[in-house]
Image (cartoon, rainbow, N blue to C red):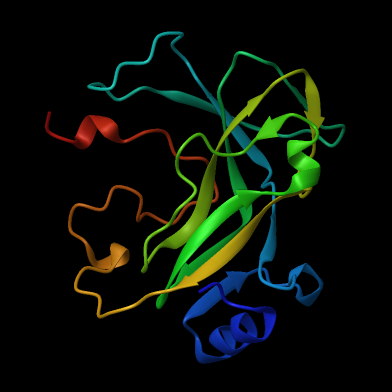
Length: 178
């Protein structure tokens, strides 16, 4: 089941969902709109290595916006910091964003119960497009969990993305053993 607007509001009041900053006008029928934060990042190396810590360069989106180029992966971040303590959050792109040829996540659209952070976006575009800080970029959808939870994300010793930051976070695949 997906939470409706009324259920999202109830969960916010209970403290099981937290959104900062929160704006009531961003609440949809069954989702909450999130916005592009002011920072983007790109990898320094052209060839990424899954076994090494690939470095990124972080930069601020200027007032006049920033033109994204096809064939390049950008890491963005949501303006909103979120916490989800009793539901599974999914981040999906808004249809208006998709119609501009912008994909906001390659594979990481699902969060875990206990995820507490800004969302890093894996942005790619099909043609050049100018983006702006605070533009609507996606929507959070919350799914009901059936059953007890043993391992909340924010309590996992090996969780790689727990440090609160308003900046995009690069892949931490290198921390895995393989």
